[in-house]
Each structure stands twice: as C-alpha cells, then as structure tokens.
Image (cartoon, rainbow, N blue to C red; front, side, top):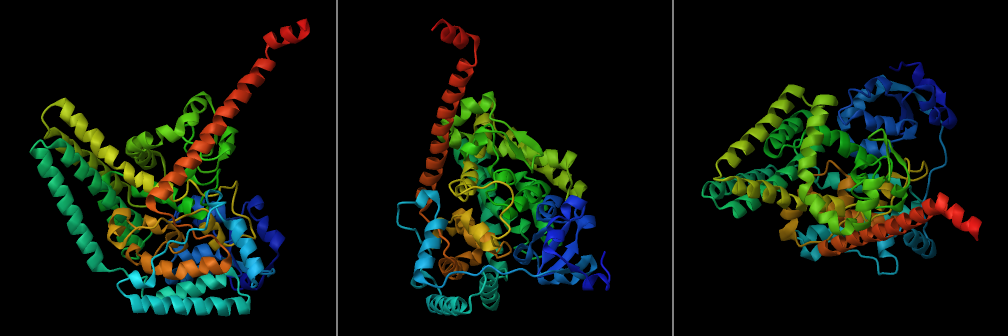
Amino acid sequence: MGSSQDNCVMISQEQFSNSLASGKHWIAIDGCVYDVSCWCQAHPGGKLVLLHSAGRDVSEAFEAYHPHWVRQRLPAFKVGQLESEPSRSYPTTADQHLSQLTQCASPASQGKEPSHDVPSASSSPNAQDNKADVEMINGEAQQSRQQNLTAADRLKRVQSALEAQGLFHTSAAFYVKLAACCAACLACSIWCTMQQHIVPGALLLGLFWQQVAFVGHDAGHNAVAHSSKYDGYIGLVVNACIGIGPSWWKVTHNVHHLVVNSLDCDPDIQFMPLLAISPRFFHPVFSRYHNAVLHFDAAASRLIPYQHFTFIPLLMLAKFGLYLQSVKQLTQGQCYINRTCETCTQIFFFAWNGVLLGCVQGWLPRLQLLLISHATFFVLHLQICLSHFSQPTFEGLPEENQDWVTTQVKGTMNWSCPVWLDWFHGGLQFQIEHHLFPALPRHNLRKASLLVHPLCRDLGLHYHSPSFFGAIQETLATLRKSALAARQFNASRSFQAFTDSKAWEVITTAG
C-alpha cells in the first residue's frame, strides 16, 4: 500500500520496467505507478490480466475496463510518479497517412481495396443525429491532427463523445424484449421436443443457447447493469441456461482482450493440436495462459494439414469442450463469483437438459436432440473465430511503443450486416468498437462505429469490415494457408528424418 510520502517518489522508466524481475507487480496509469502485487488474486478480471500488465503502462486498458469510481481506490496502491517519456504522435501529411495505412492493413486485404463497410448516417433511424455525430468527430479529427495529439488522447475524445450521447447507458427495454424472445424460443423448443419434433426442437434450443450466450458476454463485461455484483448475478442465470461458467469466461476472455492475437498469451487462438492459424505453431510455443508448451506433435501433424476441412465440424462439437473447461475452473481454478452458487447453476443446467432429453422417446432421437442442438451452437463459435483468426498475430506482449488502439484494431475485424440482423450476431459484428470500449452496451455499437471508423482512418489504421460471408472466406483462407504450410513442414521434417537415418548413411557411403 502507498503512503503520502510514496506519492513524491520519482520512478525511472528502467526501474519501472524491471519491477517484475524484482518480484513486484507495478503498473502505470496516467503517469502514476501502482503496486498491485497484493491485489492479483482478488482482481475481479483475473490475476493473469495484472501479471501480463506488470511493468507496463495500462492507462487506456484501465479506462476501457473500469467505471470511473474505481479510480477512487487507486491511491491506496500508489508508490510514486513515473518519469515522463516522449509521447507517440501521428502523421499529419497525406503521404505519411497513406504509408501507415498500407503498413497496418491486414494480410488478407493486401492487394485489395480496403473495406470500410460501416453503417452510413442515412441508413440509421436517427439519420440527422448520426450525421451530426460524424461531422463532429471529423472536425475533432482535423483539430487533433493540427494539435498532434496521441492515439490515447484521440481515443479519450471519442469516449467523451460517446458518453455525451449517453451511449454507455443500457436500454432496459432492449434486454426485456430480448429476455422475452429467449423465453419464447425455449418454450417453443420444449414444446417441439415434447411433441417429438426433434429437429426443430434441437434447432430452437441451439438458437436459445446462442442468444443467451450473448447476454452472458454482455454481463461479463459489466455492460448490462454496469455493476460487477449485478452483472455477476446475470452471469449465474446465463450459466444455468447454457452451462458455460462465468469464472472460466472471465479468466479466459479478459486475457484475450488484453493481448488479442498474441500467439503465446491469447487463449482464444491456442487450439493445438486441432487448429493452427499461424505456421509459428509448427515449432514449440510456450503458452503463458496454459503454462505449458504447445507442441506440433503427431496428432497436430495429422490434423493441421486438413484444418480448413475440419474447422466447421470441430466447432459443432466445441460446446462439449466448454463444459469441461467450466467444470475444471470450478474444481481446480479460482472462482470470481460465489463458488457454491456457480456450482449450483452448473448442476441445474445439466439437470434440466437431462430432463428434456428424458422426454424424448428412444435413444436415437435423444442422440439427435443432443447432437443437433450442440451443432447449432457452432454459429456462435464461428462468429468468435471470424473476429480474429484472419488478422495479424505476434508473440509476447504488445510492444511498449504500440498504443492500445493499434493493438486492438490490428488484431480485430468487423463484418457488415443489415440492422435487422444485429440480433443474430449479438454485437460480435462490431468487434473493433467492442474491443476499444468493452463496457459499451451492444445495442449502441452501431452508433459508436460512426465515431470509431473516423478515428481509425485518422490514425492510419485499417478498419476492416467485409461481409459476413466474406469474413468466413478470409478465415478459411487463413486456415488453408497454414494447412498447406503444415504439409510442407511435414514433408521437410520427414526428409530430414530420412537424411539422419542409417539408411541415408549407407546410401551416401556406398555412393
């Protein structure tokens, strides 16, 4: 804990960066250094988030993830002031802007015209208001260039504009309607199942799970009630409905947001030996999340070369894996919601699903209900994968001189869809906006995109937003490229094994 005397201590950049080596977990927020060593275990977002943040400036990440009142607790952890260093500024000339835009474009977009599919002001229900918003943010962008502001300053301006428009406020009517639709979907599923209409019952059950999972995602980011306590209660209800534990989700998902598309840190792209989105996985990678080495073993050498064919079938079975992960977190990991309550909701999920299966006559129809409902849930897994799989990857933590906006935008992509399909994608179609402002309610993400797109353009960042099917094509192309590289890697490794063998020695000696 800090004291008033500590507040006057000046800490050098070198001392701050090396704090982790000395066993201290120091983080910097707005020029102040805080020791969070004693807070890691109790951190609501998981301890890994703080461990990855040690010795780093997390001002923008802190602002994105925490309500304003949390700042009132920071002085208790303060140990001093961080010596200032030159801020990163951005180009103001057209040539520099074009150069940086080319460098930041994703590999999938090289050689193609950049995609900037965002909702137009005229297509919005509040066309005049949105047009004014766009004009306002474009005016601020021009002013920002003149003032040579940093990306963090520009992001704060966008956040202030979002707050001024009240976009961080949740619409209770939105979630009431959504709850009613989910209840109707479940009721129809149960009725169809009771009437032995297995296929429609299973499809509706899978749709129900998908829609409730979106609510769990919202609550996990405190984007519904904007309270960790009440959003935690919502998470428990979601767990009772879909069987995916909120504690497992918090541990995994918050790390993903912090280090999006890091090969060794981001658990959302670590699926060895089933999938490899980068040839880097052909060599041992130490996962900082799993605390284990990911090997390109015998199973991977057989599965990865055909991953663009097995991708969708694997997604159809993925929900079973989430059950195992949730139970493992409950029994072996740390719970960020009351363990007893989370265990009860997990058991309740398996109980009501068991009863529903028991209402089906015959083992074959029961198996159909089980498999079709879980296979339908693949849509959600697909939507999650589309957001990141085809985007650039890196190793380790984001570079110290790379700002929060760049890290999030480079590893994330949107996909365009009409307004009437927003319910189907659950806000995942606006991943760029969501990663920049995780606590923003999803029903306001479309409006936020009108401000985020100009921000990316002004910073020279590629705002990638193809169509939904275009995003699927890009993801499959990424998997296919890695699969073909795996075949070449296998061939070269086989040849190397042959040249190292006794047979090769005999041949070369005889020659």
